[in-house]
Image (cartoon, rainbow, N blue to C red; front, side):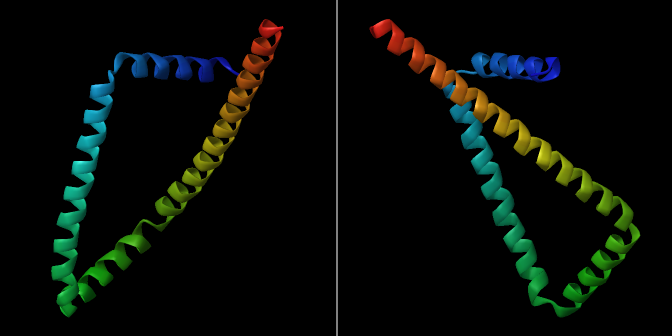
Length: 115
């Protein structure tokens, strides 16, 4: 495990330790309310656009033009996101291996202490 990973884990533990259970719960509730509000507003906006064929056509033309204009940037971001996803999976796999190793150590220590 490299130094950067260790410092990130230590920082995350400090942040988690500084939050109480009530603060974590409040953060989750606030996130849920925000997502619900955005989803509800989006349904209303797209419902209106969906009923207007000219608006739908204009939206299609505008989005096609923007995608064509920024295609290189979109491809770059998609590629970078894929790489970040692979790195994330590898980090999670490493964390899982660390967790399993710690559990095995704990079980071994508990077994030895009971004898």
